[in-house]
Length: 215
Image 1 (cartoon, rainbow, N blue to C red):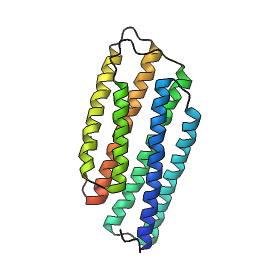
Image 2: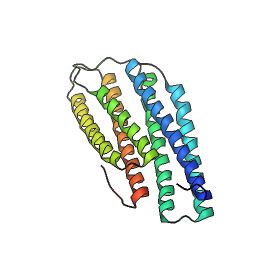
Image 3: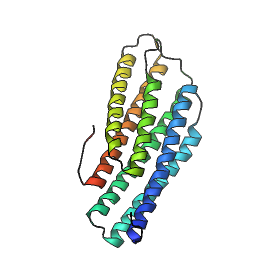
Image 4: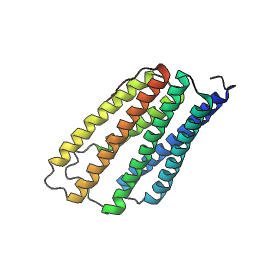
């Protein structure tokens, strides 16, 4: 991008903020999942990070609105600005869901492992972290080939969600505390994967002008 225009400089600054948000959200998710499995209380740290992500999201929206008002961007730049505002919201949701995961241990206390080991929660967590990483790389590079890999991973996450949901629903011996914790975790992970898909859709729109739906 030719950064000689003030508008281009502003777009680059917003992209830098977006990537900063994304890396913090990714770290938040990784720590929250680790805390879930180890039954460790990481809520205070995640609350601080979630608030930081929210502040950055508001800054993205303010800067994008200012650029629109001052520079009257043409179609391509306007699509990018609209996409960045939407992406900032999606990244804010990453941080919020990571915070929700971190709340489970201090709220429910330590729960017992699921009765028969048939859950694939570890795999689901790993897959969602991969999806988040792909979404951030897509923001940075706008490499459209990444979209289809992300879409495949998101579809696999949906499969894991339904498999785990069925296993939890059929449980006859696990305690309610265990089922509630695992159920909420897979729901939060599934929602994060959805928001990663929204990011891919926004980047496609910003880059090509075409609207796609990956869900």
